[in-house]
Length: 368
Image 1 (cartoon, rainbow, N blue to C red):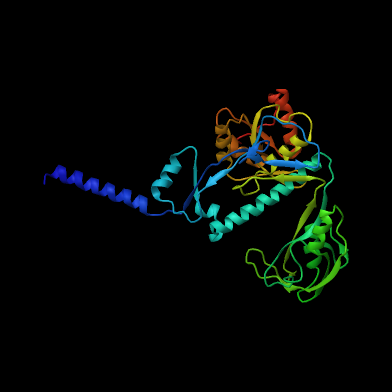
Image 2: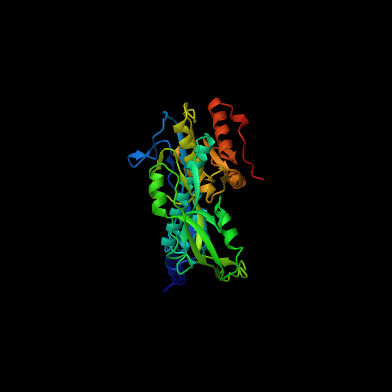
């Protein structure tokens, strides 16, 4: 066989071997890419994203789009070829697998966690919107979760309303932990609670839950945590949370979406539907950001992918959490104007400027 032919054959075989290795050998990376955007003022799968009943609503126009990021599953084994292609592509990001699924978290566990965060973000979005509109919302401290095999298991239940601990009224979830940790492990602590079923019936009737009963629990020593030494901290094995009673019904219906990052856009959509005039002025506005009950906007992940998704959907303006501004400004898609927001009130004021055409006065993002 001529030397040149042999060399070409050997090179071809090596190339085939490398390609096979690239396809067959998994690498510890995952891909993030732009996900779908959804107009919170519109419909999804044939029904309104925001449905409000029991209160006057007003016509809306334009777009207030929430944005999402699509990620590869926890069990998906990316190969070298896919990783290189993702690194070279402008509309995707390759990140270490542990960034999306830390501590060996399964896809099912991640999905469940995202669903819980999405549900909580909806509640906070409702509270923030109504508070912004000066519409009263009733809040109460409840048992959010009960730890398996803990002192509270079988005694306290998710949804129980916590009125007091050791006779001291609780106003915030953190009050519960403070009062419990005043004890040493092995000591008794008394919870005054309204059972979840009684509280639910009262809420349905539009009344304040009554009929609290005292429950005595014996505290236990918190398990050791190398990252956060607990010493002899006393616990009973519950997580306290907040439950809200709204003066009218607000339903947020959106399937196959998880995480807390749609909170800001849900709040704005609710405000638009509950107030006369058109919040967007007919403009196409997208955005992202977590929101708490007080209306503070927090940072999110995958900001650059969300910018691409918003631009591709037709957005002209993008409401950007303050802590994400630098990353967003470093790679902003053409035709998209970033608007920095720290609070729900900031976002409302920026929408007023957009409606008025005073875009020069919009708070902007800087790459530095």
